[in-house]
Length: 319
Image: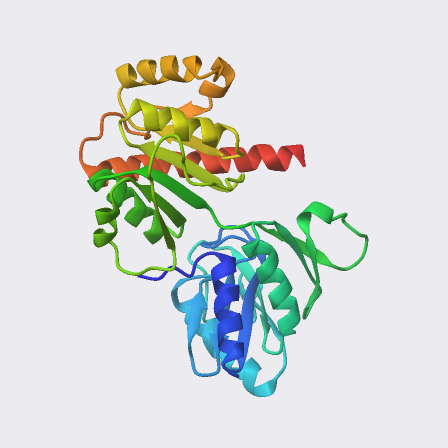
């Protein structure tokens, strides 16, 4: 199953369709009042042929947005629509009693989308500025200073990467669940046969672990979670030491409390201090002592998501 939830994937599909000389509209959730089923800034790419990637509202409203996008493409005119309270479209109501504003752009400058996409794909957050009927500014969030004026800026961040080092069914179950949830996965395994559990998938990068003294290069950033599922002290010390030098928002290792004590002792012997060790979750998972691979995967992924949103709140407070 392909997941087109994250904006970077929707933008990628938009560019693929335009490269095929297809007429495409981008629908953007630009306003929310009250409850909503999607987050502000959610995207849909909709072609004149009826191909749809992404999600911005859900339910019957989304089908209506596709119809409106088709009309916008035919007329080559942008649309700004409101659904819910204070909407002129009285026969479509949101179940949460809120309201949403949606901007549909049938003739969006492709170079703007390329800039938007390439910034996110290079693992950099981006600020996108909208006026009433267009995308008017795209700038790296790292260089952004909020200007005065009638431009509304929204922040887009890179997608979450889950890097897993391990082997066996627990490893496979977590990787598959993460991809279904919209994560990009880097699967590092000591057993190349683990690849037999997966079909070709552009959400998965496979790397073989060859030896603790030479772990694969990694480029972990603050949108990366790393988990060791190897039950091998030598490998754990090597891989966790490497991860602690990066900027992961989550670092975890499977194993019992007894395993944790042994691992901490080995890390201390390797020069890893207590402050660094405290960054490592273990035993991992929101629900303790899960013994089924599928249940363990759900428990771990729930903890990763929980920590991601905790860290995001901290980042927003800092900024």
